[in-house]
Length: 168
Image (cartoon, helix red, strand yellow):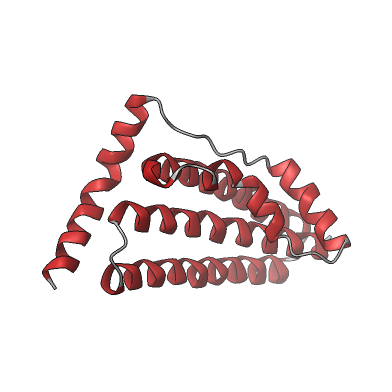
């Protein structure tokens, strides 16, 4: 139990301080999420009956290729990616509300909410399991959780855009 408490304490302290130290060092990789490219990739993958997950992998490639010993760099990268997806979600929700009737827009907002809650809950679950059930270093756990959260936002963005297209 002490090992788990120590791991949680390290993870809590790593957050803001670790990211701030990394940014000051100038070593950050930057997410290459371009929403226009992502929309094109998503449309192409759906037309080819391929999972749009390939589009998320491509958008997060810069984050995934960061060396394991540079976990803080990857964490910043995934957080930047999530911020872009979150901005896209806000815009897509506004488009849905503008183009759909009130009921369809409300259903889309509820679906979005629970898509995100469900996915982010799974990210929390994986983090908790890694804390209590493995010897994985805290910075690796945070890297994995940041990647999971970015992917959760990306999948929510994809589903919301598909709903918005169906409403038009």
